[in-house]
Length: 141
View (spheres, one colour):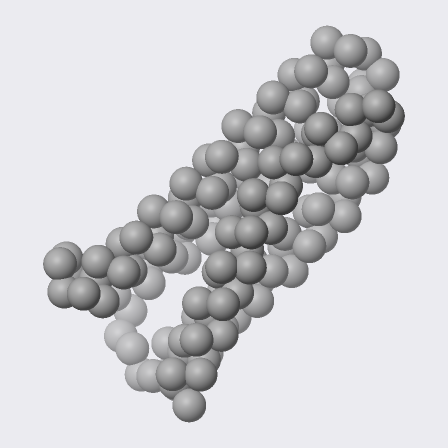
């Protein structure tokens, strides 16, 4: 049972990484209509929050069912989850109030989307690498 839950957690993380990579292209898809970025950002934020919450829930179920103690690795995962949610909410609020009709503002927001997307990808990838190294016994968290 615990293997299935951990497998689900792992699949959701891979799906999330793919979603984050796809999110890097959002500003380019809305380049002809900058105002569309507000709508696309809202939908993106909803999906982002849904996937990351499913990841957290699957991890929580795995922790309880597998009777894992609260370890440094789990604490780091929780911190990364909180940071990513905070970043995404702040990004969406910024896009929501931005004057995207102004080309300079749109260019700034476009750059922000890409930078935040890269940071989020790096956070998730770093955690995946840490967990793989932990599973192989290279490091202990």
